[in-house]
Image (tube, rainbow, N blue to C red; front, side, top):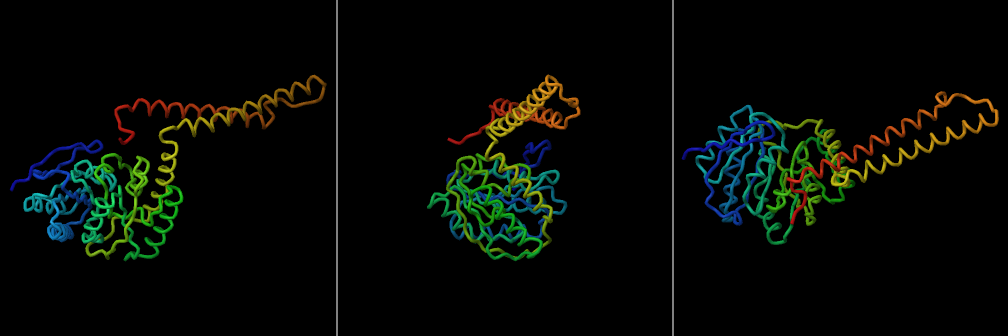
Length: 339
């Protein structure tokens, strides 16, 4: 069976897509989305494991592998799997863009009513898929996030930073999840079509879903497995980036749709503070001059510069909020709500 290539635009660079003809109605499919980077050793085993679970449960399915700029033979393995199995699809990035962009591309292609994401390193167990599927279909959850309660990772470099990161994420987002960054998750199709995953926001997909109005979000304890092949592709810098992204998404959650509520409020406060201070300095100067009291030049008074700086910053903050509102209003071609 020949592999058909489709060229699609991802960010500013084209990607190659392996596309197998889909004969099944999307309402009956489970879409398995697997982002990967240099995982050639695990792909065949992962595919066989997923296929075995799908067939034993008589599920109709598709597997979407997203090759995020691998430099090994991962893409060749995906091509071979696609030739043998009609359910396998592949997306190839010409360079490494990151997990968020890989997931976003997979979500765009996914057709199933239930979408499962999992990592390609065999640390996520495909045997969890049936129960995740049932939680979405039978219990009507919008999103189920896996919880690796028992982890087989390095305690110092992964487990402890992960606990701190998840505690901060729970506090700021209001979602009572133990493992925001777990790769094994299940979604309704409507969820993955409503959210946009960019930057490094894959860690906060449950928060993105909540911001779009999907409130029935739960979690399931899953079996975590030790890495069988290769090495992890993430370093300690992911936690620094994760906390910075957490600040970003927390701000966007509160003020992303109404930036004037933040910038305008603080801008007005600072401008009024500066104006009041300047008015007081001027009145006090006139009072001393009128009564013949020795006084200094206004420009020698430190409060003059504090007042001036406050007025300038207040004006800039107000303008930032106004420009933010204009940008949101002009993006009328994008979907900002879910019916």
